[in-house]
Image 1 (spheres, one colour):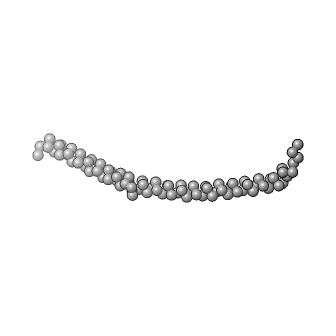
Image 2 (cartoon, rainbow, N blue to C red):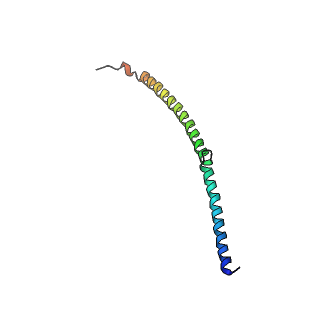
Image 3 (spheres, helix red, strand yellow):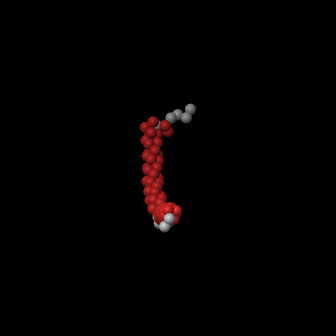
Length: 87
């Protein structure tokens, strides 16, 4: 085997290793992006988390509105706004 043939074989082997490495990386990316892959699972977890927080925020908003209404009634009663003369 000549020096030229060895050099060519070396380059072919390097290219083959590079192709194999790229195939493995592509498989990893495909697995991550599939509907049941890690990225899809992460988005689903985030969506569930946000849905939970939306429900909690809605309940909190309702409670704040209830408190605001009660405070309005208390302030009206304490200040006797309804008893003020109209003139």
